[in-house]
Amino acid sequence: MKKIFTVLLATCMVAALHAQQLTTAPATAKIATEVKTDATPVVPESILTLKEAEFDFGKVPQGKPVTHVFEVTNKSNEVLKIANVQASCGCTTPEWEKDKAIAPGESTKITVGFNAAAEGPFTKFITVTYNGAQTKQITIKGEVWKTPGTSAPENKGLNDLKN
Image 1: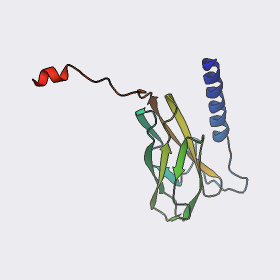
Image 2: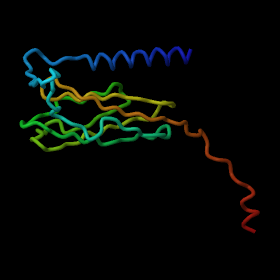
Image 3: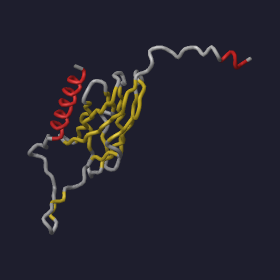
Image 4: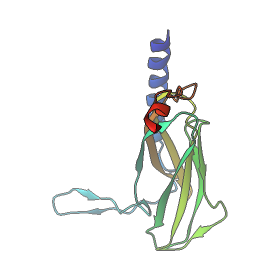
C-alpha cells in the first residue's frame, strides 16, 4: 500500500511540474528575437537570473528544519518586482522581500526553508513569478534520515577503562 501511494504521489508531482512548465506568457507580452543567417532564432537572455537553480541538502536528520538562500539578479534594463514565490507543498516555505523593487543589475535573496518531518528522499519545486507572468523554477532536494527514538544505551564498560 505504501508503494502504491508513493507511486501515485510521484505521478502527481510530475504532472504538476509539467503543468508549471507549460504555462505561456500572455499574448500582450513582447518577446524580442533576432534571426541568425542560418535561420535559428535567438531568444534574449532571461531578465531574472539565478545564481543556482537547484540545491541539494544531502542527508538531513528527521525533525530538523533546514534553509538555503538563493540569489536572484535583475539582468534587464528596467526595474522589476517578484510578484510571488510559490512552493509545491506546505513543507517548503519560501521567504523574500515582497515590496522590494529590484533595480537593473541589483540582486535580492529568496530564503527557502524545508521542514524535514517525513523520512525518505525529497525533491521540492519553488516557482518564482516576476515581471507579470514570467516564471523561474527553483529545486531543492535531499534525503531525510530517521533519527533514533531513544538515546544510545549507557556504556557500562567505560568505568572499567577509567580505573
